[in-house]
Image (cartoon, rainbow, N blue to C red; front, side):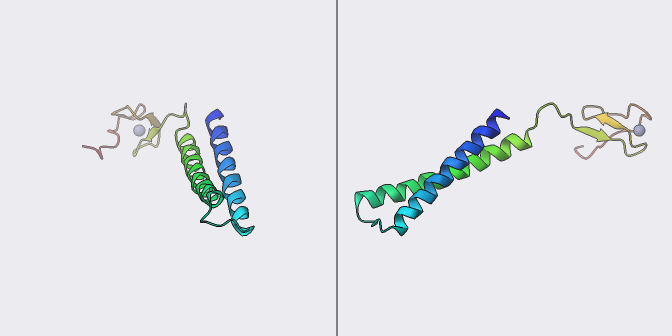
Amino acid sequence: MKRSAAASLTILAGVILVVASSASVLLGASAFTIYGLVVQAGMYVGGLLIAVGVYVHLQSMSTAPGVPVNTLCPQCGKSNLQTNKFCDKCGTRLSTERF
Ligand SMILES: [Zn+2]
């Protein structure tokens, strides 16, 4: 939760940077002045921040802790621990896709 909040802040900062830089360009900042270069750098950094923020956000979503992945028995449908080789209920051999 804390991690995704930090990711959201990173995205927000990136968006602000890009918007501010774009506004500066629209207001007439020339690409050939130091100010223009700073504005361009701001756009790149802002885009990078957005990309990093989205990446971290997706990562924190896909690795939700405390959720065990179970294997369903093909015979009786019972939910078994992924580490089980045989069904707890009927003894049927579970997924052998990897063998
Ligand atoms: Zn079973």
